[in-house]
Amino acid sequence: MRESLRKKVIDVCNKKINQKGEGVGVSFYAFFANKNDAPELLMEAATWWIKTHELDHFEKAKKIISMVEAEK
Image 1: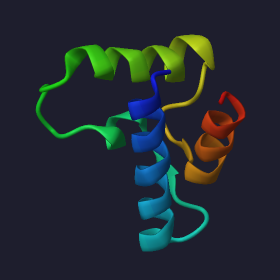
Image 2: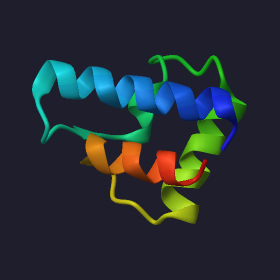
Image 3: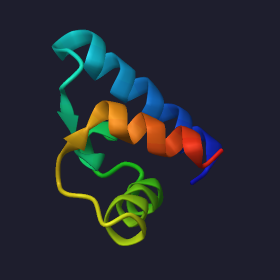
């Protein structure tokens, strides 16, 4: 995962946790606007989420942060 996407994932997850609490779930769609303005980046996130890690549609934000940080 490229560094810019890694940073975005962590930032969005932290924002969701701050807004909704420790148990909040996220989808990889949470990292993108509702329009398809970055298809290559969206596919990179989807591949990491679905194909590489076989995650469910919604996962705990804390889990995603841990996974992304572990890959540094």
